[in-house]
Image (cartoon, rainbow over all chains, first blue to last red; front, side, top):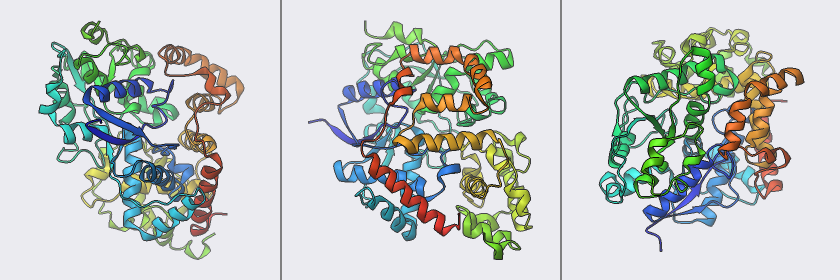
Length: 298
Length: 199
C-alpha cells in the first residue's frame, strides 16, 4: 500500500508524446520515489485552459471541469484531486469555487452533466502537485530522500502565473513566492535570486501574438542569465514550453544567444533521488540539461 | 438582442457578461494597466474599459481589440485594491463581443481561442498537432506553408524529443464517452445561450 494516494488529473499536454510528455514521465518517477500512488481520473477531459473563454463562455467552460471532478468523485472517492498542469489546476479550482458560490451555476452544470450520466457533488479538494510536495511532505521530509544532491548547479526558479495567481500556495506571496526556491535548495541545488520569477511567459498569446508576447520570454531568460542561472525550473507546462522552445525565435527577434535548459521540478527531484536520465525524461529537452545528465545515476 | 438595454450599457454588462456585476466597483486607480504584461498593446486598459462601460460606449468597448490582449496572468486580479476579478471580466467582455459578432475581424487571439475550443470540443482533449497546424494555416494555404516552414526546426525538435506525434493528424487522444461529452457541452451551451439571449 502506497504511503499517499491521489486522484490524478494529468491534462492534455501530459499525455504520451504530447508537449509535456517529459513532465508526465518525470512525475511518475518522482512519485515512485516518494511512494505516491496516482490514480488517474478515468476518461478525464480538457479543462478548457484559459484561452477557452472566448468560444466556450462561462457555463460550458465550468462544466468541463465539473465533469472531471464528478468522475474523480465517483471513481476515486475519498482522495484529493491533484493536477500537475497549472492551467488544469486553475480551471478546476476556479470552477469548484464558482459552483460552490452559485446555486444557479451548480444546478445548470448538473443539468448539463446529467446528459453524460454524471453528477457533481463538490466533495474533493482540487490541488496542485506542488501543494502535495510542500504541504503533505514538507521540505525537511523531501530532503531525506536525496541521494545525488544537485550540488554546484544554479537554478532560476520560475514560478510564472497560474500556479501563483490568483490562488497560489497557502502562505506564499504573489510577488515573491519562495516554495520553488526552497524545493531547489532541498534537492541540493542553488536557487539564484532574480527579478522575473513571476513574470508571464505570454501564455496562449505566444502562439497568437508572438511579436507582442516574445518580449516576456526574453525578459525571463535574460534575467535568469544575468543572475548566474544555468537552468530554469518551473511547475507549469506552458511556461516550460514557451520559455524553452521559442528560444531560437527570441534569438532571431532580439539578437540574443539564449540556450538555457528549462526543467520541471519533478525532473530535479527524480535526479536528486537517484533516478536515471531516462526516468527524469531528460531526453525530452530541446535544450539538453547536460549538468543534470552528468549527475544522473548511470 | 437586448434592445431595452442599449441605452444602458452598464446594466447590460452586469446582466450578460461574466463577472460583469463588478464593473461599477472600479475606482480608476490604474494598477491593472500598470500590472499587465501586454499593457503597451492595449488601446484601452481595463480601468478605461470600465469607465467606458459606465459612459455607455457600447460599440467602442465591444469592437475594441483591447480585451484580446489578456494573457490570463492574473496580475491585475491579485493587485486590484478593490479585488475585482479583472481577468474574468476581460474574458467575459471578449466572449460577449465575439458571440454578438462584434469582435474585430481577424483578431489573432480570437481566432486561436476559437480553434482551441473547437479542437477540444471535438474529442474532449486537445490535439496539439492539429491546433498548431490550424494556427499556421488560418490565413490560407500559401501563408500556412510559409509559417510551418518557419517553425520547422521547433516542430522537428519536438518530434525528436517525443513531445509531438505526427500521427496525431490521424486521430490522437480523446475521451471514450464522446457521445456523453458532446451531449453535455451541447446542453451547457443551450442553457448559456438562453440566459444570455444569444441566437
